Length: 285
Length: 275
Image 1 (cartoon, rainbow over the protein chains, first blue to last red):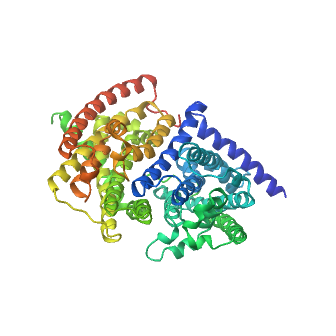
Image 2: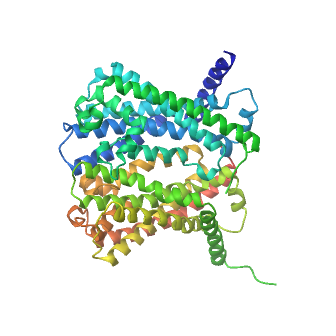
Image 3: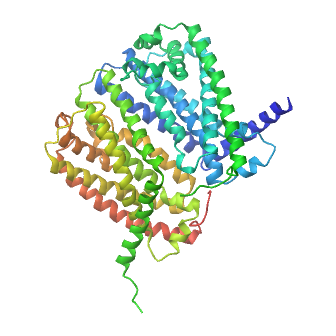
């Protein structure tokens, strides 16, 4: 019980620290602009790809499939990068990881908390993308879907899966050199391709759709699309055939597995790093 | 007793020394090669499959592959040239470089040369994967034009990167965040994954101040079936404009590096970390 309370306190303090690091270099308007411009530009790029390829406008269910998938993928990408990169940032750049490691702070809770502000920021960015799509591009979004049990439970479980995976990747960073700083982005890149974020998984070549069916994030995006734009769900017959309850069950199991697995991997890597004396070792080129 | 080497010799030696580190670093860390080759293919493959799943004409697949290849150069300029002085400052190397007889410009030239090696590997892998794995077709009917467009783009792009690098002599995280701000918007404005003419002529013309906008458009006209039909300007005019941009950005880089170095020295920011 004391351990849980300590982890919660560490998480809260680390979240405040991460927020400060992310936002104390400029005024809120500048930071807010930056938060929105990048994901919006990435989304507009896909909107233009859609227009070039089909030119059928936002009423086409494929547009909604691509748009909503892109909006929510930004959360996954940001979470994987931000949480896993905390280790590199604090070990190599600010050189503060030794201070954290020698204090009574559970390192995994600290790492998760330190990356929380990026997760929150990416959620805001996703919200802005959806609002822009609905108001400016005519995306047929059902706002009531945001309060549906499928969306709320699916969102929470998917984010938990992403955080679990990111903590595992942060653990890998503890025992690898700076050369591998792109690990979070690399995994996010694989998931971008395989999770059906911008095209139905049936379009994947070389039988890669089988891999897609093993990824929780494929089901996560489906659970978020379905309440918001039900027509978009039909783009992927494989996923459309799965019931809401089954989607949530898959997400519940995967988030539990990724959460427990990520934490176990992090702890194993932390033990290894401490034993080998490399926890705070800078790895300049 | 030998005489002091001329500034040109010092420049060349410093540039070579900095380039050497980059190339040797690549060879020492083989995992980088995997990271530099397989990972960039993933993003390009995602856009390519998006076009394919939407039933677009196959000509656009070549546009995507060329855009993906040029992405490698844009990321190299943004993160390994424009922001490099920030990283050097953070790691404590900048003060060593500044207190040596070489100029910051020489260091940047070396970074650009060294970075070109790994970046060309990435770009080549993307094109090879596009052709061999995804069956994308190119029509290199005008190789001289393609070569001119490619070299002109790189010259203008790296000169722009050197000009942007001066900002990091003065600014810290704020400059870094601004660099982040440019990544995706430039993908959009330069038409990395779609013909830039589809942005509409006024926007596309404004975006032509970015070397990659004109460079990609010219390359697509020279190497992609359907490139001429989606062109913004005639390709020779674009190559000429790229040469002009290279000259302008080169002069701008020279002036801004001097001005910002002087300012950074005066304000004591050259050795300021974590600002």
